[in-house]
Amino acid sequence: MPQTVCSGTMFTTPSGFSPHLACAEPGEEEEAAQEDQGPGACLADGPPITSASLDTLIQNLVPTADYYPKKAYVFTFLLSARLFIPPPELLARVCELCIKQQQLDQSPLDTAKVRKFGPKILQLLTEWTETFPTDFRDEKMVGHLKDIIHRIAQCDEAYWKTLNQVLQKLSQRLALMSQGEESIVKVSLNASSISDKLVAFKTKPPPIQKDMLSICNDPYTLAQQLTHVELEHLSHIGPEEFVQAFVQKDPLDGTQQPCFSDQKKKTTNLEAYVRWFNRLCYLVATEICMPAKKKQRAQVIEFFIDVARECFNIGNFNSLMAIISGMNMSPVSRLKKTWGKAKTAKFFILEHQMDPTGNFYNYRTALRGAAHRSQTANSNRERIVIPFFSLLIKDIYFLNEGCANRLPNGHVNFEKFVELARQVGEFMTWKRVECPFEEDRAILHYLHTAPIFSEDGLYLASYESESPENQVEKDRWKALRSNVLGKT
Image (cartoon, rainbow, N blue to C red):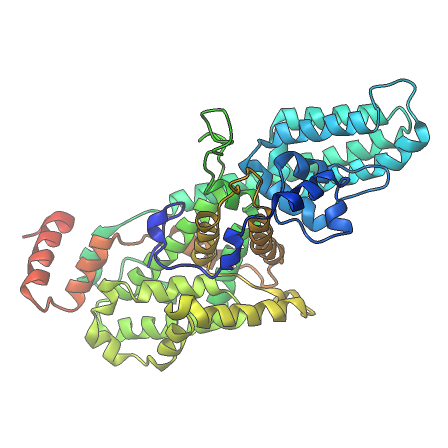
């Protein structure tokens, strides 16, 4: 069924995260040992960090002349740290530690030492700008970046050249992201056009409303175009949105506000993607309920069953689930005569694949298969993995709710964030795939702009197609005809 985002009410079953992430508390002696080690030593030379103080985790992020944190640690900490400290403050802390440890506030500088340190700090800043570019929409971030490079550039002017290249790429990336986000939001908001009055046209040939089959009657082609829409949406979702969707106030923070105010808690792209899923559900239901004749409705059902199958074969599980959800909406499922006319064997197979039983066991098995195919693929066509997005959000929600961010001793529960980074990192790999299918602008335009019925409109269209079966349905039909069509 259609979904909402960022609300605990949309999640009804526990997700499959590892229960030990709620974490046994480590002994104080073990933690003290970790605290005494040098930057990143516990990552490079010892077991992975399970928990540590925020200060220790920040120290582990800071490179030196002889140390650079593992890439997985950089991603995990930059992703999760925003729950405890705003990105500008984190970068300021990193720069302060660099200045102190490398003695960058003294004159003259140790040129040999700085030349060993310089490439490493540049690497960290480059990774940050490439993975979390939206952090740098804050001018403070760019200011800290320029300040630290200004200090080391005294030893090698090449650092300025590298910085300018980084900033140029960042500027271009942010400009493209802004254009894409504006386009996605505009399309998703405009696509909410609802035209329940179209129900009145059901009995007026020739049809006034275009339908999907008149735009595209090939299931594989439509599945390809749906994949275009999905990958376009995915490309704009940043990893930080998964954290910001469920951000809460840090109980150990002395301020009265969480790290993100409502203005800064950016989940625009994530929310637009959920709106797209809901639109596709309603579009499928509208297309089925709209035709006046039972035979035509049955043809539309069979067509979308084939589209759903092609989505499954492509690895587009989000469109697959939206189509199944649309076909399972009550106004559609009650059309028993129509369903009796359609060939539905393939539909029940697809429903079985997306069955929620066992925490979506069948779907998760299919997803793992698609992910394995993606890892060994030789073409973008085989690399496509588009997960059922609402379930991914649910998994992250329950990981966030089921595991404390901090342990009773005040340390950050880093093991939780390693799992969070694993899930988000996998998604980030999938979203980078370029769509290998050629765009069909007519089909894409229809998908984004075709009018859809509201829930009331769907019920009315359904009753107009197959008469109400009981008094409750008859009363509702009469009320809907009065409200929507102005008839009695």
